[in-house]
Image (cartoon, rainbow, N blue to C red; front, side, top):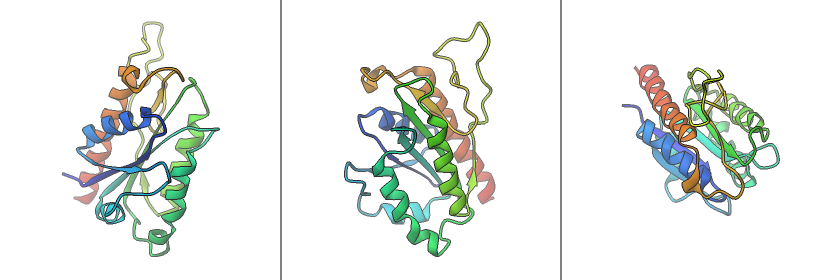
Length: 184
């Protein structure tokens, strides 16, 4: 089994719930970024030891939260030594709007992964885009780059869409499987 870490920031609990679904699928360790943009003790060591790093952030104003950006900027230390080169990477996001420019956040994650010399893994899931499709279907929001969730701004984390959470779980499972194959 691959060693997977899910590093994420959650402002209101929705992205944390999604991170938990990803971690459940990947049998991964959660690495939360706190409200000040800091990691818990030992987190940098956990990320260094991981075969795969899955990144998560809510989409705020078309990109990652400032707390996640602080983490990304701090990752210049492992970047400098190419410590994360050839690790498997993936990412996920949530916003209140159906579009909400979530792909900008996923592309930010992809760019960060590429700067680290990483290998990106997408969802690998088909879209549910027929008239028979329902909002609770897997990958209903149709993202190949990484799972996207949409949660109304006045909804609690407990009210998140089951299909979005299942998409996140399946994605975590896929990243772990790819990392295990790559690790050989």
